[in-house]
Amino acid sequence: MYITRETDYGIRCVLYLARKAQGIAPVNEIAKAMHIPKSFLAKILQRLVKAGIVISGRGISGGFSLAKKPKNISILDVIKAIQGNAAAINMCAIDKRMCRLSNTCSVHPIWVELRGLIEKRLQKENFAKLI
Image 1: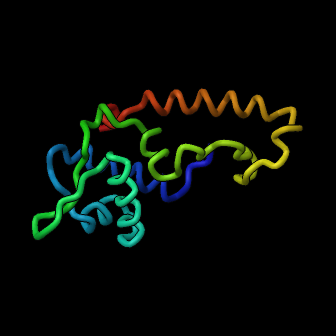
Image 2: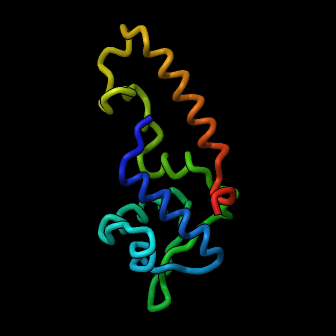
């Protein structure tokens, strides 16, 4: 499984909001605290809102907060929100490209099995455990 920089930033963003508990955080605050470029973070937050992980508030006191309790958000949820459900399907573990040889590669079944184990672990790890 390949985790993009965008996904790493998404995980950091959700972690920041989980630590903030009930508070609302503006984009500037999250970007500065988690060392994420503000313009990039705005796009990431849109995906997290669309996935129902984060909610947004508008206006002077607007910002972002978690839509669910941290214990109900897994790391895998954030990965799927940013990279999509098919993030790891046929992704080569060696060079981060889509595998064109998956039908003939004798190692491919091992990577698929390992990917499944990793996804199960990431599904178990929630943000309440990380704060």
